[in-house]
Length: 340
Image (cartoon, rainbow, N blue to C red; front, side, top):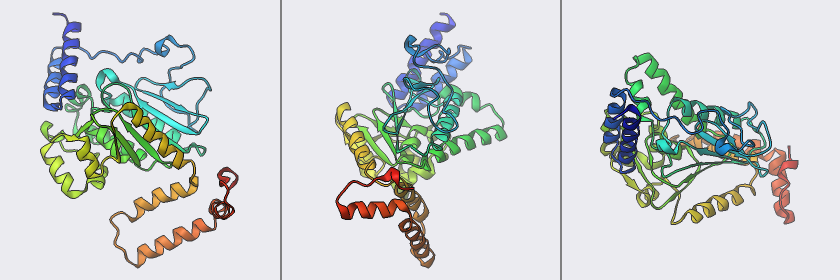
């Protein structure tokens, strides 16, 4: 059997193992593929050709420095992502490596980091929606890439882990509300993405897993964000056992906010949250996100009370807050974009 056939068979085995929640089998399949000398199949958009032959959709490697599209027609597409900013100032990023279960490799890490960094500079943005194509939301780290990384020295592994940590931090500290639309399973880093988002809706058939210990690793990069959502008790259980977490359990743990029975219901929750977000003051929502981060795990002492008082005093003096109060008293919608 030729290398091409071996590669296809190995990738099918890897995807099947991931889909059924058996990361150790996926790891062994990746090792076999690497030893046989077969190369992973290229992503359908990695060639630089227009996606689906559509000349209006251009291939790019990230967002502009201001987070705004370089052209007006169609969604932006890279090797691993699709993204677009609508006239409603809502950004939509879609993980797009369905043949690899949307797992992270070095290209996807770089592209998502660049995209988030660029979008975070867009002062007109109101919200960000993170979604994915295919059956999986994100299967964590690509096993072929992880296998190659296992042969790197400690310094290079440190730098790569730091790069992943900064990606998580970018999403966690994103300046506008973030919504994760989760249509399928998420493992490892994929679960980290979800934990970094402000609002999460997941399809009832989705499930989640922190399987690092089965590979002799720990979920160090994602741990701060996941533990913040599920608590120390949940972290002790799922970090140590690598048990799958079904959607209902994830909801009970606080990892996701809503469970959708259908794809249509997923969209309904996203729309409902967006409708709520656009009614709120943009600066107030940024301040609210910063407030959550600032008070987490802090004792309620004089220092915290002073911090809170300074924050509210600062906001009350801003034009946005004055407009919001005046609009509420007058019974009219606030003119947020007229407030400086």
